[in-house]
Amino acid sequence: MYTVTVERLFVAQHFLTVPNCGAENELHSHAYTARVEASGGSLNEDGYLLDIVKFEDCIEEAVDKYRDVTLNDRDEIQGNPSVERFAHVFAEEVAKGLEAPCVESLKVSMREDDRAWASFEKKV
Image (cartoon, rainbow, N blue to C red; front, side, top):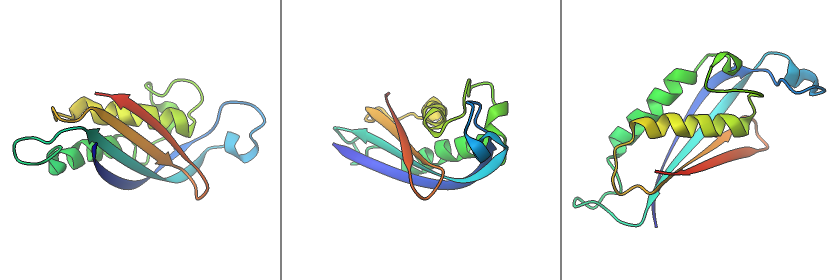
């Protein structure tokens, strides 16, 4: 299996909507790290899994959509804006623009602090 990975850093805000989360229930910012991995079992005729510049463009469009916004205000993030849910929504956003026939899956790992990552993987 071949994998191409791109990381982007950006800041966004949210507040958790489940009770008893202390300071997490108040509006606050995170310096998110989005690690996006495209994987597939074959390469194209040029020996690439995908065009990395176009892949970076798809990721940058997703970053631009969520940079400096309050995640709770985004219609596509329904319910509690957990890092798990954000990884899922971010993966869907990147996948919208991805045109790479050799890519079989897309995985987004999202980090919102120094301790933990959450991931979502989808078949494409």
